[in-house]
Image (cartoon, helix red, strand yellow):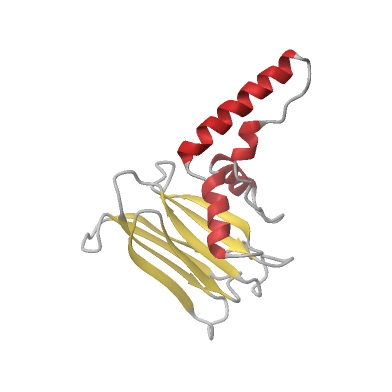
Length: 180
C-alpha cells in the first residue's frame, strides 16, 4: 500500500473515531498502530530504551535487517548529541551480555544531504572468529554485520563525507555489549 493510498484510510478512520467519540464510545488509537515497536532486550540500558522510543522506526528497521530473533541491546547516538549517526547493536539469546551471544550491528546514517562513506566493523570476543565489516557509500545505513560470538567484542563505527576525505564525522570504537 502506498503512502498516498493510506491518507484516505487514515482520514476515514479519524472520521469514524470522531463519530464514535460523539456517541460516547471509545475508539482505538489510530496513530499508535502506525508506529513500529522495536523488540528490546531486557538487558538494554535506559539510554538505549530512550533512543528506541525516540527513533522507533529506525530501531525496528534495524531488527528487521538483522533478522528473526534479534533484540535491540545497545543504541548510541554518534558522535555526540549532534547525531550524525546512530549505532544499533542487536543480540539473540537469553544472556545477551555473554560472549556467546549472536550479535548484529548497523550504523544508521542520520545526516541530511545524501549518502556518506560509512564503515561498521563488529569483532568477536573469540579471536578465532575475527571481525566482520561493511564499508561503502550509503544513504541509509552500513551493515548489517554479524558475529556468532559477538557479545563482549568490539564495534567500530566510522563516517566521512566521502571515501577520500581525511576528516571523520564519526570515529568510534566501543564494546558491543556490556561485559564487566
